[in-house]
Amino acid sequence: MFNEYAIVFTLVLVLSFIPVIGPYFKLFNTLVHEVIGHAFTARLTGGRVESVHLFHDTGGLARFHHHKAGRILTILAGYPAASLISVLYIYFLKSGFVMELAAAVAVFLLISALFYIRNLIGMLWVMSVLGFSGALFYYTGTDYLTSVVIIIGMMLLIQAPASALTVCILSFSRSHHAGDADFLAAETKIPAPLWGIVFAGQALVCFAAGMIIWFSDDPAGLISTIISGTAHSFHTILIL
Image (tube, rainbow, N blue to C red; front, top):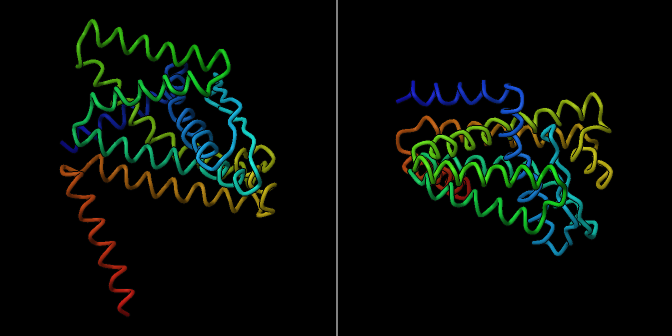
């Protein structure tokens, strides 16, 4: 089983470097970053979301209006949201909820298109994903759709740390092109490289967790063991 999981991971990793196809699937990570990370956080903390744009180079932009504390939280949430969602996705994938994930992705795409995405490229991308997935399910059943669901999950797991590491490197070399790290530096006066390190650190931790789950034969048991071990450690520290 280990070899099969390693082959799938390697194939998706290679796929991410193929022109057109790679960027097409990478946009799932961008969508999660912009909508769940920025747009949802803005709404939950009392802000107003103006629009989300997706671009052909896999970049994205969320426009929102917020008070200062809300702006900081909203900007901060992008990379951690992408990382956490990638781990959760892999967990449910390994737990056998494949068609449930397919439905969740479809609902997420529809919500994003109806309420947040406001540029042509973004809308065309969403419609193409929904149309292709729907046709795949209608004409071939679940087998090929399962492959698409797996590819999306692997791409999320790979791209979450890749994008965070990219912004971390930019925060040191070209801080004014470092996206969220630069925006947070302007809001908090904390240097962009420190935010870059925070983004990269959490992304690598989540990536390691996702990889452990992906290669585990019993992800539910693994999570239970981790939670129990963590709780025991905190209990021991409190006693001491």
